[in-house]
Image (cartoon, rainbow, N blue to C red):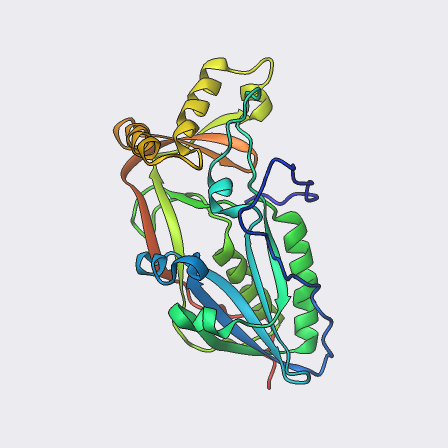
Length: 302
């Protein structure tokens, strides 16, 4: 996943049904001698609206919590879509615009408090390590860099087959990846993690070797490929939001026709388009174990 030099302003066209990070705050500077507990937080996606419904499908959202021993204050940090998952996964086809229009930025959100009921009810709230205030401050600087340079949400992992050793063509870039990066940074700073099982959700597409198609200008610009541009727009058209029930079922058949019967998927990744020659089983949601990391520095003893 590519790093970018800066985060562009979002277009007013991009609107979220639920406000991004409504109670967000700056990350505080901790006293170096503070002892801070670090918690693994996980709950079903949209748990606040649907309860454990998506938990049964193992579609989980991840976050990390902190508790200061000196102040007793709790904090939550997570990373998610600025304009909800659908906007990050598929574009809008706007009238008068040839190119699909994307609202696909993601970002970190930090706020005071840990909503115990939210994480415990259908998910996980468990202590994973303890760090010093100095380590927390170093992590905060890394979060700033990560947030300013890793700006686009990517829903899909794309790999060659369900085999664990199969080629991964594209990595996802979503909430769990941010938490894994944060854990690894803490481990590199000296955190020693408990030996507990940790699982994360991945949504995987299965494809033969991807074919590079070009960027927005080369495909949709004045000198672009009109046939390819039309094919990409046609592919994305069934994924439009806010359909009626009748439109939804018509569009489902179109999606099956594209992906399963004709083995086609167009992926937008790092501001470029790729063609995926899809193959069975086409899509799979997995809840796989990824162990907590081991760092490269001497451990911090508490």
